[in-house]
Image (tube, rainbow over all chains, first blue to last red; front, side, top):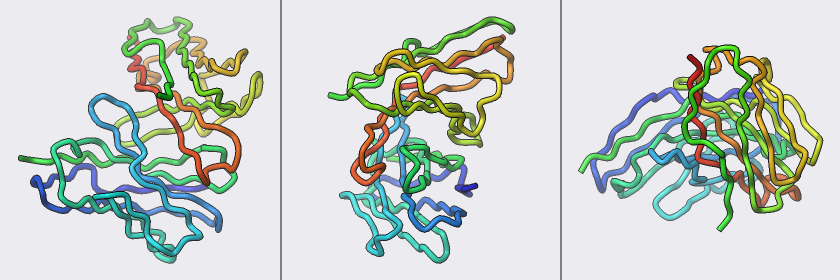
Length: 115
Length: 116
């Protein structure tokens, strides 16, 4: 079975600063995907970024980037130039390559961006 | 715009009641999921369905059942609600195809269920 661990229950950052959220996972699979989802107070889950395990290059989406360390089974999210709208719960998630969207989620990290 | 709609945003029920949580998607997706979200535990998969009338148990199916009679609708049923089923319930859908290569999960806005 896969496990995903987010060891930071809460984080805070000043507007325009950079923050990194940590995630580690455990699996024996070779074909898998990793995700970061954002859940703002509206409760709507939003996909932030996705990484395919077979790709060595770290995924980036505008101000969001990941540091994917496959051997260490680590998948951290870096948010640059933090904005007030980034305030949300962030979930790290894992999916096997054949899972049809069955995700294993971490515990979540509440991120607060202060003005 | 794609939509996954959950019938209730908040729901309060009594212990022992039969509870139905409804989810409808308008994207013609084959796959539908029910997750439960609890503080400190993240989201956990209860059941999923990959086609009409097809279902599989997720990680925590005990105390729940599901129904998928039409492609667009996936219902979660609590046969006899208990206080430990007080939680946020999230429905999601995704298309079949190349698994997650070019797809993503589309989530509803959740139903906060309180069982008293």
